[in-house]
Picture (tube, rainbow, N blue to C red):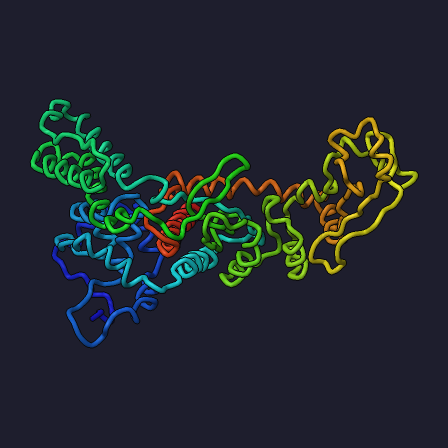
Length: 483
């Protein structure tokens, strides 16, 4: 069963919070800023209301997860710290002397209570609602971009993951006492997952027995992360597969294996919308959804700022239909005309024909492609194949046995021509300067909140990670702007 309302804290020690949790403490500010009852309203249907023992307050469980993403710690370490950190207990709505939950409860909460809930949109919309209420968002533009997150599984084998985490644990121990090396179990040298698991379990047991070493926070944190990997993630480790993750490309020469988070952000750096896809999806296809979600969250969108990935024809058409200015540079192939071997063919403006490097002029021009707006048409220029056969410059240009020789140039559509003109305007150039803000936001997500690697396996797990991380980042930004 779930309680109908939060229980009032009745404790003779409650006054200690006023002494040890200062007014400018971030967790106190978050508690004062947000009415977390929205969590109860969203999750109430996930609990049985007429039988069973009382469940742990879902608001408290949700706050535990927030602490995990604010401080980038394991479940075990978050629960452990909430035993003695008064700011944690205050944030969780606990009496100072109250006992904490079992760390395994967080795993069950994630898997059972948060299942089938659109957590991503719910949490982003809540933060945008708060920002609008506080008068923080004044701009009418959104900045769009995508950031990648590498899959925790597949990129390394389960044994490699365990080796990496056991190594970190040993290193933290050696920093305190190098002489303990002889007391630790012999490292596993067999390429076998079960043998590696056994070694890690033995390593943890030995370190736990040394009460002095295991009492150090840096040792305890590394040990808890290794234990959590063995316990909470063992089923993923043994299959060592993330079935949803896909290969995506950051540049022409580099790739990653994982997921993409497509973001829309206001100029005040509040994330207004997000979609999470597998790694191979292209950025531009998510623009319509990001605009629509931002508007549904309450953002008035008059302009969208992005890179060339968002300037495809369908996006320009969509923006024009919605009376939105799309501040995204067209691909050079569009602005300059998509041409191959540009140095080999020169345009003769008097005749309106192209001349090849051998000096031969095309004798005919034809328009190719349907004029239905689905894709750009092209002019195809025809050359005399008999002259090509005898040309002194035919190497690499003429293919033996070819029956024709043509050269094509993409025709700019009316949509592209108007976008090219807009691209040269002062407004476009000034707004383009705002795009750096979202790159800084991506860096914050990855470097401060662990968003460079997935916390869980699968697209659903990635969406949960994205929802909680973005919620935390937005709330911190709101507090900063209010301050």
